[in-house]
Image (cartoon, rainbow, N blue to C red; front, top):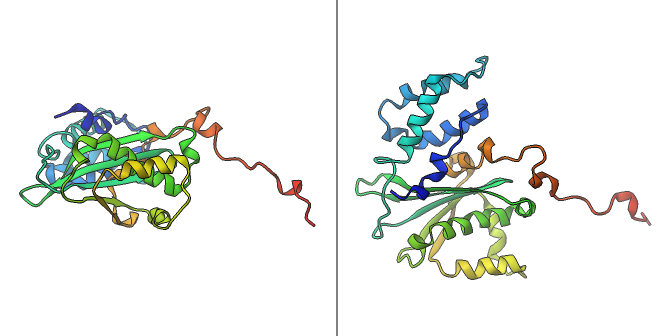
Length: 237
C-alpha cells in the first residue's frame, strides 16, 4: 500500500484534549464494523469524553489510539484502488483545512476507503469565501489522486456537505484562480452530490484536528480579512 495514501491517518498526532479525542472517535465510527471488539478497544478513549472525567492520556489510551490508526490504514478497512469500480469522493473544508476520503464499493457491496487526504490552508486561502474553500477541497483531492481519477469512465461521485457550491452553477465572471480551477476540472468526469453535514461525513473529522488549527502567532491568523474603512470614515449624508 502506498504510504502517501494513508499518511493523513498514520500521522494523526496524539490527542491533547477531549475535542481531539471526539474528532478521532467520530472518524473511527465510520469503520467500526470492520474492527473486531471495537467498543472494547475504544473504551479508554470513550472514557475521556465523559462529563467530569479529567483528561489523562494513559498507556491504555495510547495503545488504543495507535491500534486504531493502524487498523484504519490497513486491510480489511483500507482497500486497493480498483480501476474497474466506481469511485466515491467525500470532501469537506473548514476555515483552516481541506480534507477528502476516496472510497469504492467492494465485491461484498461494502464501501471501503482507498485513501485519505488533508491539507492546511495557507494564510491567503483562509480568507477565501466558503464556496471557494469547498471547491478548493475538491480541486486538491483531484490533484492528489489525479492518476486514479483522470480519465474515469464512470462519473466520480463527489459528496460534499455544503450547498455553497451552487454559487458556481450560474454564469459568473471568474477571477484568475477560479478560471484555473474551471480548466482543471474540465479534465474529470464527475457529479457533485449534496449531503447535509448532520448526516455525517468522514472528511469532517479530518478538518477538526487541533494539530491543523492555527496557534497564537500563526500567519493564518495574522492575515485574516480586515475592514479597510470604518463606519465613521464615511460621510453619513
